[in-house]
Image (cartoon, rainbow, N blue to C red; front, side, top):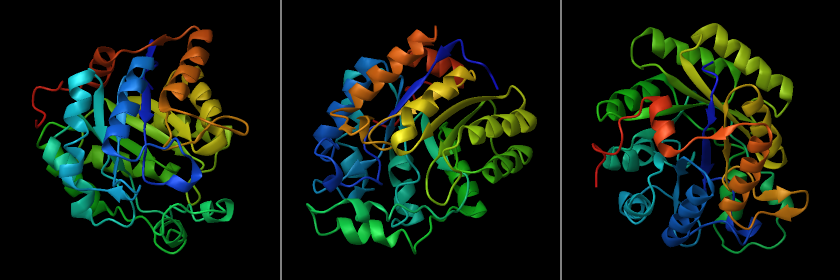
Length: 309
């Protein structure tokens, strides 16, 4: 791993997993997503990981909805914008790629395999639903896997790579690291890699700290110092895993996509609050916080000059 002199904070501001009934603070409208992103950057986030939603909170893929988000963030910040290609398991592949294909971001997420991606347990914790779509949506994940077969991964790499987009490789299990090594060996991707270890999703690797150290150990074996590492855990383990990743020399990700909480029994009122909390932890560890310019240099990003406007 390339041990970081400065830690990159990524903020995933809304996602497609959590639903409006879980928290009144989850950004839903395009204006709310923009404000959440700007607040996170002002608090110290260098990268903003973007999903979009319809006003009732349903995950959105339409480029015209992202068009109300991406330019507005670029006008108000210098953050690196990282557009999802994961979307949700309910979307087609063309839908999942539509925004990143349209806006040609510096960075896009790429899930490194098909998997059971289950969050039906949300239905056990919600007693009052704000919208009719929410309960069927989360329950459906128990029977509908997320599909990202090798042909889909290759298509994404070739399609977005032709635009100069680089990737945040989301690895939900150790096998995903070996899948990443396969595409590297074939010359379809370039170093330095940005590996995002994802822990605590039902169907993926568990949120055990031994798994985090093991993932870094295997990544070191496969990629040497040709990669940067970041990690997050879904839910209550978010801050602990961010701290552990930074302690190992890596980067961190926070945001209401990954956890709705700021502490035990306390909902986070904003993405910025989570950024502020992890930033304080990092600075207590003696770490410096990376600016967007630092992140671009560390990850060999091209800058915004070729992004679609």
